[in-house]
Length: 158
Image (cartoon, rainbow, N blue to C red; front, side, top):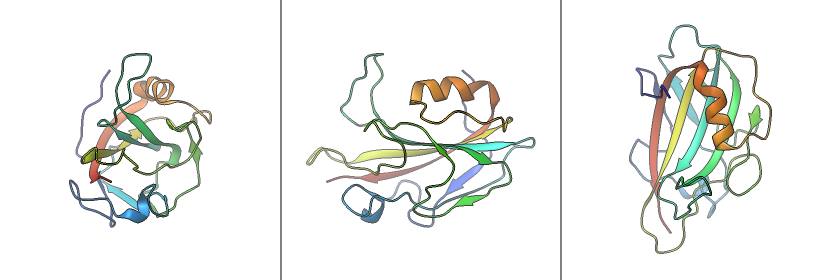
C-alpha cells in the first residue's frame, strides 16, 4: 500500500498535535467530533476522507490487527478545507462500537494515555464510497485513489 505522509497539513482549533483532546470531544463529554481544517492538498484532489483511530486500545481483531476505529468519514468534496465541531454530514462508515458516525475517545479507566490519530486522505476520485464500510473495507477501497495523507494526533486518558 502506498500510504505515506505528504505536505498536506491537518489541524484543529480544539487541540494541538500531541496535546490533550478536550473532554467535550470524548465519550466522557458531549461526544462530538472536533473541528478540523486542512491546507496544501495535492493537485488533483477530488475528495477527502477522515479516519480517527486509537492504536493503543487493548483490542485484537480477528484479522490480527490491534486498535480501535472511532470514526470513518468520507465523500467530502475536494474543495472543502474544513469541517466544524459536531460534524454529522457526508457519508460515514461503521466504527468499532458497531454504529456509524463519530464516537469519541473513551479508553478503559486507568489505562494511561491513549493516542488518537485523525488521518486526512486526499483522493483523486469523487465517485463516492458506499455508506457503512468498515475500516479494512474502506482502507482497501481508498488506497488506489490516495494522493496525500496528513495526520493530527491528540491524547486522552480516564
